[in-house]
Amino acid sequence: MIEVKRKDNESTGSLLRRFSKKIQLSGLLLQARGSRFRDKVKSKTERRKNALRRNEIVAEKEYQRKIGKLEDDFKQRRG
View 1 (spheres, helix red, strand yellow):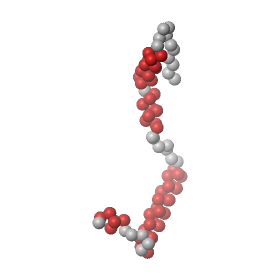
View 2 (cartoon, helix red, strand yellow):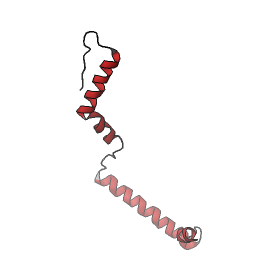
View 3 (cartoon, rainbow, N blue to C red):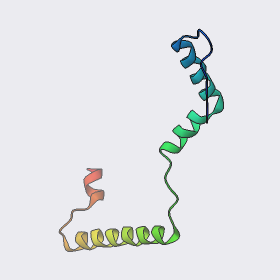
View 4 (cartoon, helix red, strand yellow):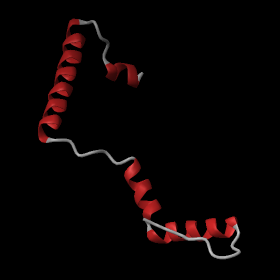
């Protein structure tokens, strides 16, 4: 944890500048920004469950396409 104590006759602006400089030099800001958007590691069962769900969705779309309820995405993209 970063701690900065105010010196005698030090202005608030000067105190804030010293604090922000210490924060930047410590690397805490970069670490916080880096972990902000990082995905959490999923368990093996969670990954398997998601993969099975994706396969079900693909199979359902393929079935819909075969029976004619869903147009081919390939045809729509090409022309």
